[in-house]
Image 1 (cartoon, one colour):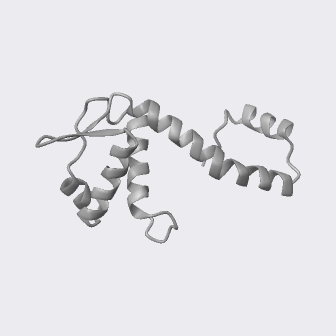
Image 2: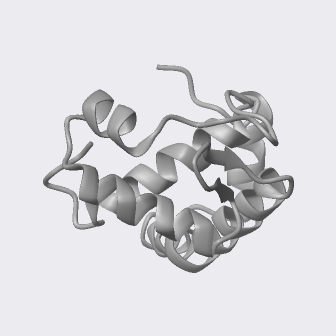
Length: 123
């Protein structure tokens, strides 16, 4: 967790869970860690994880089976991908476009760079 990041801890946890689902770590119908298990794993208060799970429930990414736990919903990957794309287009892309304009980087130059690096810069 990034405790100094402006995004709330519970939303960071929800983002991590969405990432894990999209990366195939958890598949539709699979049980995810209990609130207590995840709180211990992440070193946060269980109430914080509860808020994360509630957000994921509201988004339709997880489902609660009373007495059994939380499970990845059948539509989780599609919903997570759609939400993350919308967030990127709304929040991140405008920053990239502004930076490109300030640095005088055109779309053609960006496309050439992405083609040479397969879209991913190596570290």
